[in-house]
Length: 340
Image (cartoon, rainbow, N blue to C red; front, side):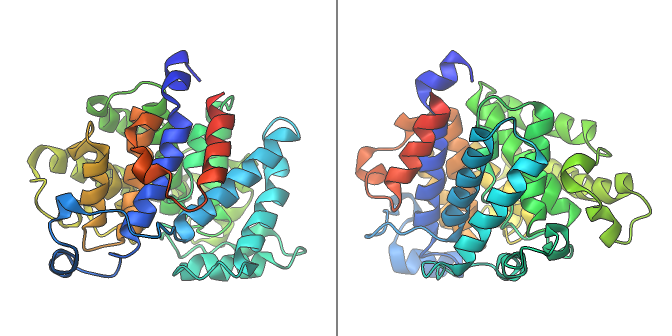
């Protein structure tokens, strides 16, 4: 972490923003924009619900954060060290009575299979699914300090593959963690899309075998390079749409119309980024725009909040909102750990 990153407390800002976006978008998910406006009034005046409850998005973010902390406490982060704590945390989430916040079917199916500790995690992975459930939770990988580029990319893709094994889910998770990292360490909003495009092109045929093992053989691709390239190509296409949208979209229109409804990984990434990039210096406005969308509002808003918080730091969020968020204490613990 750079001195600037520590001073602004990027990890605290990103985790707080993620949870706030999740809570703000929770009541509006599964509603179209006219219905949201009819129920809650103008989108720029959306207020945090009371109580400010989070969904499976933040629950699984915290599960990943705990697994990362455990693995890194035990030594240099690697696939072997991450596998057991990640499996344990995902299974604990699956069994929790609090797992009643409209969790995704892919996560439920995969985590149920992970309960069998003798089953290789790759046999639990849902290769057909590129739902946003993998990249909505990946921010901790972009925030944890001291990781190499290979560790960060490998861990981001591996945590996705435990549930969502589609190559686009892997690539979008990697890109999401990379975007959080870039914003936390000084990349400006105007540079972000170009940096992400370059990263996607550079990694288009790089298959992280050390982290993913033989996952690719469960698909129909002739080799691992073409397996992973499918995911990066879909992400590159959505980044092109995002670049056009940032230039042309009115902030008053539903962002989902430009970059997708966010139910799938690459669209959640792009629409979350669009909401942030429309209001890079107005984090609450970015969250409100993300929550007032026709798609997966809580996931879009949690990603927008993570990006805004990584860029602006902990002071982006007023105490009147941040102090009310569910699991505030644990979010602050991880923020302090990674900002230190």
